[in-house]
Image (cartoon, rainbow, N blue to C red):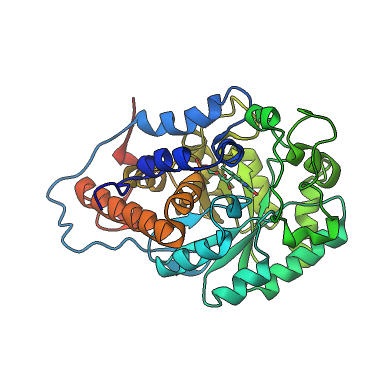
Length: 364
Ligand SMILES: Cc1cc2nc3c(=O)[nH]c(=O)nc-3n(C[C@H](O)[C@H](O)[C@H](O)COP(=O)(O)O)c2cc1C
């Protein structure tokens, strides 16, 4: 159809026009002045590519092994909360689309469909689980067990959220979940973020929920603990420094996700693609390295691979496509990105991921 989006930015524009203001602002916003949100993208645009010619790209292989499973192409769906704000089928629709396109879905602890519902709907799907460590360690332990039982093959421990970053658009809207939506993975905690604010305009209910339930004292000891209670590989998400990345690997993590939570936590934090080379050097092949934040084009994926990532994650584009076209929209968006990456590989003269090397990169 002539008015169907043809790239990820067009999905964003279409979704912003369609979503109700509270959901739109929750999905779109970054922390404070949204400097990191913008920088995540701008940093990709500052990188120029020194491409090869006459490199025989007649046959191309986009596949990559991540945590022992060969992914047909190097994209993973980042954990994002509350997908049913975009579409009634929410996380289940995304699970179906991801499976159809050969993509691993990372399920947020704050999903609006339970782990069990997603697993029952798409038993064959490849999925990881994103964990927050709650003050209630029994709840946390129970979540890990449920993720294992639901067929998740890795845990992403989100480490950049000891407290929630302040997203001022959510504060202004006094963000809360609408009636009918809940966090079924966390049913034990009650109706924490469905309830109306304590006072009008008091703040996002999510901010209050985190302050009450998520443990701000999270430390390296908890990573040891997590690794001791699960046999699943643990990725530490939210790392932007080489010393932290090395420490995570030495503590038993299977890898790291270079992430600043899509610019939603510490504003003015370093753009993730700028943080990636130092992290990749520190990990030095001892674990997986993924990166997220601002990935919208095949050339962004190419740049991330060249700078040391095995794969990228995408967050908001999934929400935009879900809002625009449900399951079919997410499938289409993923197919567009995959084709774009394959074309970027061809034009860069890099027929497989091993040929995507740091010498392709020039910082402007
Ligand atoms: C609406 C929204 C909700 C998110 N929820 C979570 C979450 O529950 N857990 C988490 O670890 N990260 C969460 N993130 C961060 C993403 O996992 C990811 O780091 C980020 O979205 C990547 O940037 P991008 O949106 O520019 O692709 C969320 C991001 C957005 C936009």
